[in-house]
Length: 199
Image (tube, rainbow, N blue to C red; front, side, top):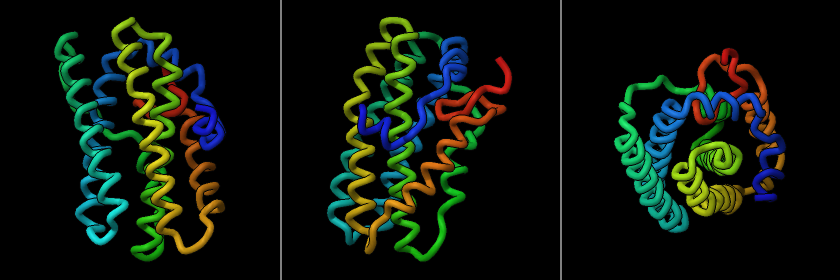
């Protein structure tokens, strides 16, 4: 966990944790959305970069795990009679994608770096919110920590593998944007949102 905190450079604000405790239905719905999107991202990378065996291996495993997590969240929601309503997208992923540029090779590296930040932040939030939830949810979120940490490492490893130069400066660009997205006021409460602008 220390490597993830070092990578992110900022922790989840206490105001987000307070909001999450009071909006657990929304937390679970958006968590399900995040797992579904993560699986779709992995599948998209597999379809797009068929000549990269390392990527195919890691993303196929990641997609399976994310779909399993999606199924588990949906089952928890059903048991709690939480309707899977539509929630609009958060600004978080869009804010990271806004950094994507360059040719196909650079877009791949940027996609992988963004994936590393998304997975690292997910892991950090599972650890942060877990102790504030009921026993069932706390146990479930704790069970996700290991796989989410591995997903973060896989994305970062692939980004470094496929880059033709050191990507430390590029990672720092993403880190600064990610930090701002997490630390600034946010109108919509989501799993990866910033500081809630309303209770």
